[in-house]
Length: 334
Picture 1: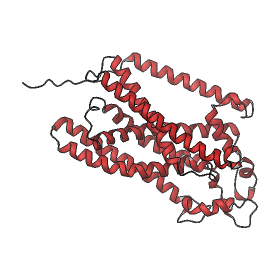
Picture 2 (picture 1 turned 90 degrees about the vertical axis):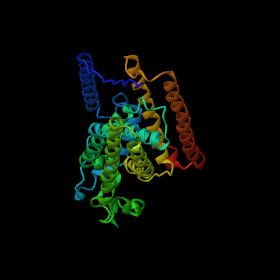
Picture 3 (picture 1 turned 45 degrees about the vertical axis):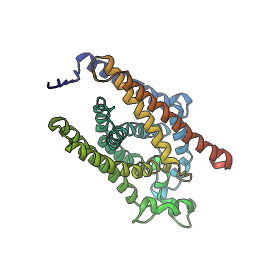
């Protein structure tokens, strides 16, 4: 007896479209209000940003005077409210990039582990991965627009030996950013890494997605085997690129400080957030009458994933906190 094939297609209703447009309009209005309030108080009001963005802007403001001082270097001062916008955009892009790449990572984990329980929900993390190239374009554009305001290490005067603003620590790290060019010039090595990482992630997304769709149409195990091999290779690449990306896009905002745990910390935050997003979408679609193959056991498995890796995230955070607390180095304890 042939098994019945059940096809589900999400219907994007006019009511849903209206809700999304309304939410977008509310977001734009709140954004405009936030910018206006930041401009009206000089950009220093506590009410003008979230705590996490305040920390990022505070880090950027530490070098504001140095960025404005050496006129001969062609540097310019950016208003704090505009710097806050750059910081918020960068921070949000890192967040949604995490959701996109974790979608692909979740898929790769399922194939590499030969998991069968997740077959009914794999289309959700697969859809999340469509954001990867968009995040890459935003990140590249943001760098060229706001690099001097986001990254202190981009200022050329920091690498001029004998100059008042010469920074021997950053000069020693210059090769990591600028190789093979001279320190203080165009950060070719940094930009190459950014383009390479996003290109690799998107290529593997396209390849794995192609095999997944072909598997649905053709059946058999040939496409499943190809997807599993691609997933195994991707996981190795992701282990390296996600850590280096965390150094480049998060840790280098404060270039004098470094942590060998930063890659793990960013991954843990991405992974827990991605799992929570997948679970939320599964629950909403299930409530709307979709995902008939999904039952309480699937939701329990997702919930256990979130709980387990929340503890892992806590472990990483506490380990980093203990290192800073125990060492009691003034520039770190702040």
